[in-house]
Length: 338
Image (cartoon, rainbow, N blue to C red; front, side, top):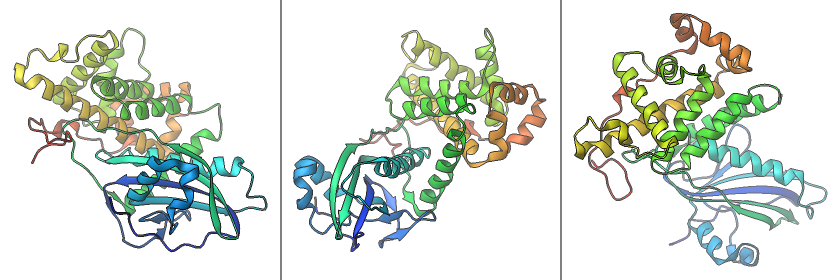
C-alpha cells in the first residue's frame, strides 16, 4: 500500500517523543494540527525515510507505519535523550490512554496501532522502544464511525477524568476496575463481550447479594430510559451474562425467539449493553459532579438509596437503548448491511 505523505516536522535538537500510529477510518483535516493539550495530530509519520528505522522496528512493523493514516505525536525537550526513562513512559502512557478512550465510541475501526518511544539529537529521531497496542473489536451489526477532530478532543476530556480518579488511590477503585473490565470487553469477541459489558455495569450499581439480577434491571434504568421494554432487555442481557459465566450457549436465554433470529437478538443485546456501558463510563469521566457519587463504596451506596426520580435527575438524560435496531444482514466485516 502506498505510504501516506510524510509530514514536514522538525524534531527537537535534544528531545524525547512518543508516536502512536493508527490505520483507522477518519474524517480529519488533511494537514497536521495540534489538539488543545499540545498533542500533534498528523496524517502520517513525520519521518521522510522510514527505512532508517528498519533495524529498530523490523519490516512488518515498518509496513504498518507506512500505512498509518493517523499519528498522535508528543515531544518534550531533554538534557539526556539517550536514556529510556520515565519521560518516555509518561508520554507513551498518555497516548495509550487516548487510544483506549477513542474506543468508547462504537464503530471506531482500527486495523492496527503501534506505540513508538524515542529520542532526537540534532533533530534526528531514533527509536528506543516499540510495542503494538491491543486490538479493539466491534459487535456484529455495528455501524462504523470516523475519528473526527471533535472526538479526539473528547478523548482528552475522558483521559482527564481517568487521571483525576487515579490521583488518589483510595478513591474510585470500583469505577477504575469497572472501566478496565469495559475495555476488556471491547477487546473480546462473541459472547464474552456481553459478559464483560454487564460486569462493568455491575461495578457501578453494586447490587446486593441475592438481588443482582433484579437490581441490575432496575438500577440500570438510571443510565437507560426507564420502561418495560428496557427492563425486559436488561433482564435478558443479565441472563445471557450468567449463561456465559456458567459456560452455557449464549442463546440459551432467547429460545422464545424464532430460531433464525436468536443469533441476531444476541448481537442486538450485546450492542445495547455495549452502548449503555460506554455511555455510562464516558459520562462519569466527563462530569465531576456525577463522578463524586462513585468515589467510594459508601458514596455509591448513598447514590442508589436516593429515590428514583432524584437519582435520575442527578444522572441526566438517559440513553434509549431500546432504539437499537435488530439487524439481520451483515457485510463481510460484520457491519450492518445497508
